[in-house]
Length: 325
Image (tube, rainbow, N blue to C red; front, side, top):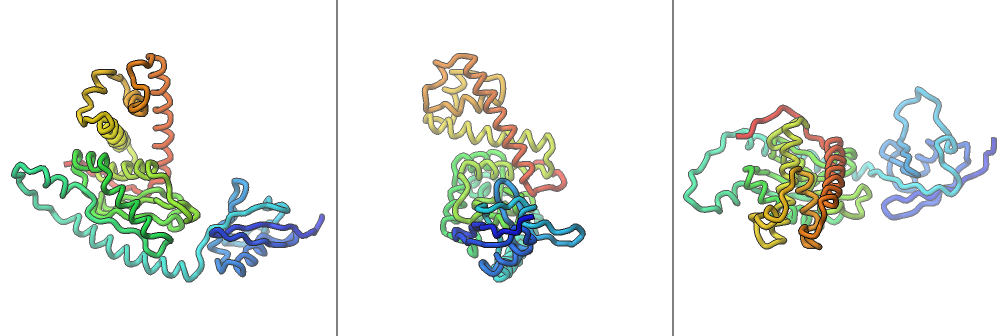
């Protein structure tokens, strides 16, 4: 077996590090070298390359693989994710503060709310059914951009439309740090007391597309009513996304009545509604054949089902069902 040195290029937070190691060195040797270069302990390192992931081994039950056995070759480029011990301490301290705030919000949500009799003004609904507070994680990079993103979501006319229609109220809209819950895109705490959204990229050097985040937000709003991902939840989630799309289509057409859309073409499936909405502002519906409309409907249905399955797998909200009032 050859014991020649191999060269690896490891990128961490935009900085590239060149590492030289014997091909038969254990993978722990790579973790130790990276700790010296980045101050990230081996236990907090995640190495990603060619679709594979390597994390520090927590036990010694099996023999440790070598660098070559792990699939690393000379010239391999590796992306590393992780936090230093100092950063982790700061995050834990911030977490404790957030948890205290969330506890206060949960306790407030459990208190019976006084229902005010309407005096005919529509302003009551807009003030009650909305996001009452937004908060970015100031210990993460570019907090001002995160605040701007959350503010845009909280003032999105289509989102506010469905919130007022379904009487949704959210105490706090904040972000979900990728390193805290790597598998989650969203989390609803206390049936709307707090909604957390993963607005940042895993590498912390940018933000996720707005429409993707908004779709996750609609998913989490559905958890204001239903805790589990059952059929009732899926029906409401689909309804919210459909109403958001219809609202924007009506706004683009200059009306919130959707009368022009329904007079032009009356679809028989929810997916056909989605397909028709996506072409508003383009060539229009009147010149399309039935086959073209059905094709778009199938594409919309396939994309919607795939997105909903991915959202369910990356949603951290789960709990007893709550009947809407």
